[in-house]
Length: 245
Image 1 (cartoon, rainbow, N blue to C red):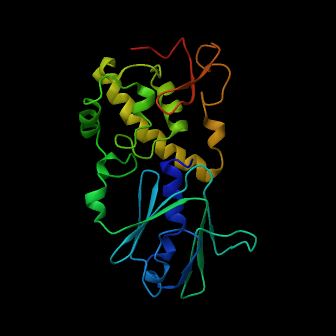
Image 2 (cartoon, rainbow, N blue to C red):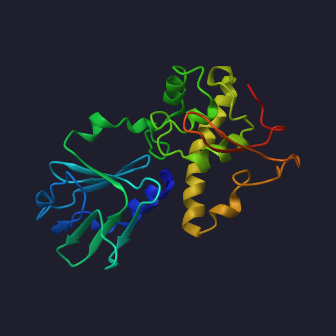
């Protein structure tokens, strides 16, 4: 499942479509009013966490790539049926495959708290601490995957951040000292932007310190691998240098 930084990369890749008029829209997505898109201009493109938001004057199309979703720009494959394909008046196309697509009519400001998005300028440490304070028994591994607290953070980010700040994934939020909690929050933002930079350069895997690794690069301890949290996601951690609070 693409994490927030990958969705920001997608937004930047399609930013040239902003302001263009849609000539035709089609696909197999149920519940999508394709006819409503015809002749409409793409007003804006936004992201919130793992959501790509295509904004039109009276509605927004929300796209979530899920586990296996993909997109193509001006490169439709005839052997693949897109869930949504937009043909623009200048002949360009934008297609999405194997993803969740929902048409939203509500105001995005009513639907989203932008301050929860780790890559949004509105994100703050103070507000994040306030959100975390309501979940003292939540584990660190669950907190970093909770999209209402860290929108855009995914499993890779979770593993790498907890390793970098030396927090055991089973640590309870209410037991983590405030200075350490602040460090975790700041590192989540910092690593998310590094993630984007490395992903664009094609070097993301080279920078993994704990994710999929066998030996801790800090102390040589064998890395533990467990499926943890409410979502039972793959979790890699060092039992020696990551403190259990």
